[in-house]
Amino acid sequence: NRTYASKIAGVLPAEYQAKFNETFKTTSFKKAYREGKTDKLLTNAQKLASLDAAQKDKLARIQEQYAKERRAANDKYAEALEKAENDGMRSGVMSFGPMGGANEPKELADAKAARKELDNKYSDQVKSVLTDQQKAELPADTQFAGVANFVIDDGNGGQIEHSMEIDPEDIMIDTEEGEGGSAIMIMQSHDDG
Image (cartoon, rainbow, N blue to C red; front, side, top):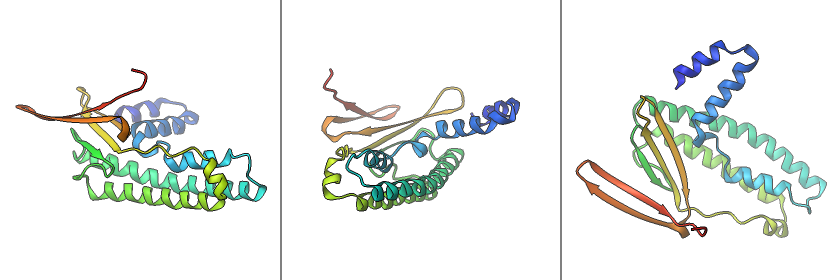
């Protein structure tokens, strides 16, 4: 995919190349660039009607600094994902659980841990600005059992990566061993049938 993206970017007018490259990167590495709990916390905190001017200002400064640091952490995470894929470490791998794959490369594990540490740091900063009453007004965090990450061959020499957050209330896991290997089935129930 990167080869074709480079070719496409090369024929685009200069004013569109940066946007194309950015879109390609964030789409290729959705896991690294997706919105996290801290992003949602900041968004919801800034929507609180009870904020005073000082709180609004502090939250705006936190968001600005967080966006800068998060971008750098996301870029490192994406680079580690790409390196792992190029080294053949992610091909055909499925990892499950809150910690991800046990066999992932150290660089990838370190990038994920650094981003999580950053998210926790800024989540704590946001919460320190809010009163107890304001914290109670925030939407409850959705609790997940973990994330199932799938990386499979697409049949054309590329890979497809998909991540799915798993809610512990609505999950059933089944494993099956067969001649060709093993499989894990994750079934999620829905209230809508």
